[in-house]
Amino acid sequence: MADRKIAVVTGGNKGVGHGACRLLAEAGALVVLTARSEKRGRAAADALAGEGLDVRFHPLDVTGEASAKTLAGFLSGEFGRLDILINNAAILNDRSMTALTVDMNTLAEMMDTNAFGPLRVSQALVPLLKKSPAGRIVNVSSWFGSMSDMHGGGYAAYRTSKAALNALTQILADDLSGTNITVNAACPGWVRSDMGGGGAPKSWEEGADTPVWLALQGEGGPNKGFFQDRKPHPW
Image (cartoon, rainbow, N blue to C red; front, side, top):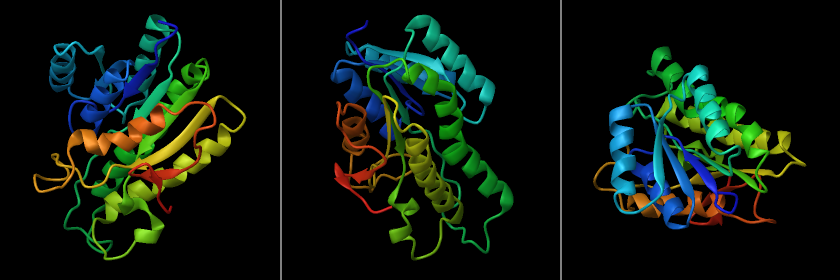
């Protein structure tokens, strides 16, 4: 097990997260696919395992601190370390809401999942990532969170949550400066999924390519960056 990467993907039962689990496993990693729904998460992991990929399921609700700590305990007991964390789990509940119409409950729910969730999970798993020769944290963000693309209005809660995730990425990278852990954000682009809809141009695997590329970077790879299609994207 020492020569294999151990990876965790949050929200791995569908969309970009599912694509990331597939690509990581195909690259030789042992992948722990996590999801809030045990039924859906286990079915997704079993489907990949049925193709001969080393993918295992563990439940995780990123809005619960106890859930994150339970995952950390499992990883510690089973593997003793973690090499890769892809914070992918996210929700989008405000398609028609502007900053003037979004209700505070919707904003709070989206912030809790999309921004606070990655922080909770990172706090719980960083001690295990520090035991890796090269720990990698990748936050799946969006161009909707880029200040350079912050125009056109709408999606007020989602955009705010992803902007906060971008800020968190930079802060966490600085806080882990001098350790073996790098922290980057990735924009998967417009992906065919429940969130992106059926008319999006990218497949799950295409959307997962940049997050996985960042997760598999070796020594000297990027840190504190925001990338789309493997190229730097403005914050």
